Length: 262
Image (cartoon, rainbow, N blue to C red; front, side):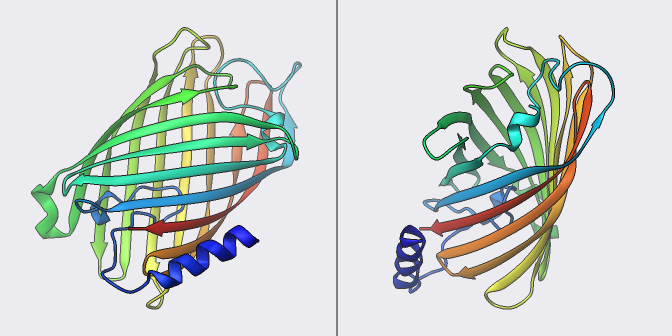
């Protein structure tokens, strides 16, 4: 609570001045069009995920290779630290580090996801912003090895309404539990008032492990966001299903995010 109050106070003190670029209209999606040259955006996210129902499909556990995890994913909480920087108007870089907290004293590194994104200005006059992105996903204490993701994004701004879609292909770069995946994130954002906005987000992955059957995870839910120029606070609630070789997990996630833009 003290840390949250300190961040809030710092954000209020710095509200004066120009509105800095800020790509987090969503809690998960990168909105690349809002990052200009020299803009820096950082965010801290706390996420809790819990299983609501488990359907057993056959004998055995919830494993079977790949990187979707199992019952253990619902233990503790996840912390995520993210930062994005606009090198040029059409070029930005970012990094996203996940930490798993299983208990009060047990922390584990999760996925370190780096990204380089190129904005394509060809369709900006029509209110459409395409982009290309590429970056590694470096995993520690995970079922799956390191991978490389490359994909495309598309944004459509129509007044108060913003639509964003990211679609990426993921390929293994190590020999550990090799798998290929298709990842997606999508969202619709609407500005309710000058400081309050709402969004609907969806995210998921389809995975083809070499040492196991096809697996998938699909989730989605609403986001509410309060923004005071350089500072914002957001919350997202999501529901979905995670398919494993021998079990289906129906679960819920709750995410709280604090962010700051320079």
